[in-house]
Length: 275
Image (cartoon, rainbow, N blue to C red; front, side, top):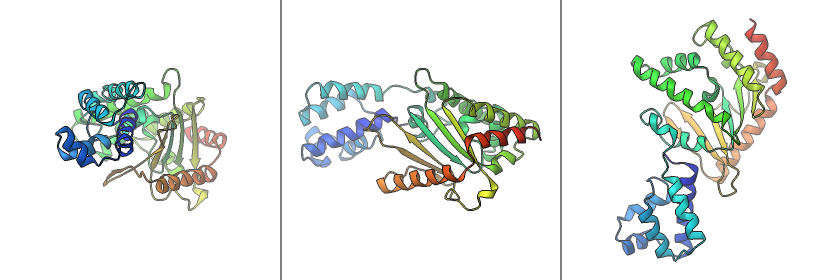
């Protein structure tokens, strides 16, 4: 599961190779590697071994302090994240990227964002979406709850801006008591300084979010571009081209403009909680 540091290292390795005017096949031949190994390292598909990174830096003639920084980056990329304990639940790269994000923008037209779900709401959603054994379902619930401390990260918690469709707040997920507790949790979360919550009202009509949920992860480091994550029944995708990322940023801005203000959204939550 790639992290931001892993992806950053992969990008730097590609830049170094291109700076030297070498093709990946030539690098593999020079080092006696399989032809695909260079590509896997440059696309963060494999964890970097320090010995491999050292060989590449030697070949590319990289000296300190750049060399020291890249070796440290390789060491950081090999660190185990907390999510490894749920390796059979979390698949792909999203959780690793989310864990290091400085900002998270989430559009959810069907369910409460995972980072804001109560345990009972998550259990109801996961039971319906992923019919499985009780033990497996509970493992998924624990994994989802393990993500929530991210929003309380010491020092610099990420800013979290969520927009949910009004229908999310009215679907009787888990029954009235479970939904009421979830609505109360959402209101409490919306009062925190690093969390912004907006509701897309029914009255908004057609809007640019009709194609489905997506998340935009942002990072303070200039070298780390925004990451767009789109999850669907058929699988998850990370649109990476500049044009695609820009398109999702524009969609997000239009969603923000079309949704209720944070204050009006909080008022709606209070109203629905009292029903």
